[in-house]
Amino acid sequence: MKQWFPALFRWLADQLFPSVCPVCGNALGKGERTICLSCRWDMPLTGFWRAEENPAAAMLRKQFPNLRHASALLYFRHESGYRTMIHALKYGGRRDIAVALGAMFGRELRESSLYDDVDVLVPVPLHWSKRMRRGYNQAEEICVGLGRSLGIPCDFRSLKRVRRTRTQARHRDADARRKNVAGAFRLRRPERLRGKHILLVDDVLTTGATVSACAEAIAAALPDTQISVVTLAVVRKYLRE
Image 1 (cartoon, one colour):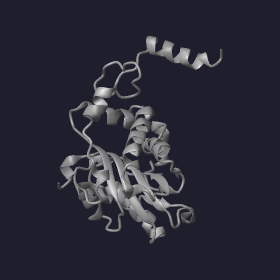
Image 2: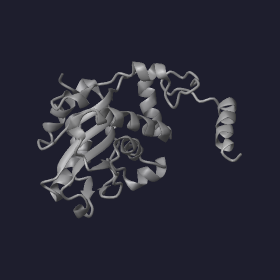
Image 3: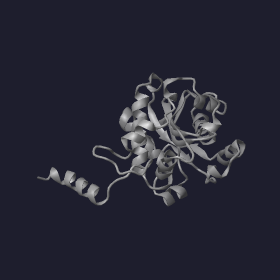
Image 4: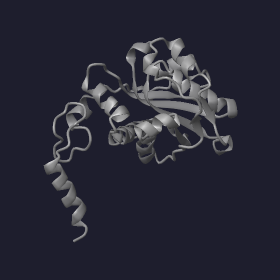
């Protein structure tokens, strides 16, 4: 009888507090989880993971020439439900969205041979004070979902943010963003990542300043390490397509 308790609890919870899609706001139907099927179908996917040369990789290689691969799952559309979804996972405590999208992205990456030799997932870290205030790091939650789909371990300890920085959204200029995060990251105990292909993970790719600063910190300690980057979303206006 105990095996019925979890299912009964979920049914009661759905009746009393029906879950809604974070994109369109409609109640999730039977069998739908986190994001409704309609919004999954309409998601503005980039398809970047299918090609080694893509706009995200081209932008990032200008800042970090030794980058192996780069991709993003979807385009960040302002004034859309998908923007609301990203904000919910980033600021609204919706860790479940981050995990679900990470798992979805992982299934796409699994179909691409470009990421077959990735050894470890490393999230872009938050400063400890911001993490304490927010209660979680959304990049870590994305890693959890990716790891489940790809069967790749996550490393949440090696890369650290050693300096508190202003929120990048306050800096419109790409140069200002780079200066804001310059020297903000450091690799601890680099021997744990020596010889590995590292996949850096973040939520949104704008100018690429943050992930490039992370890649530089890793490369400074491990010059021969292979580094790739994936993010859930990318802001299209910064890309040259």
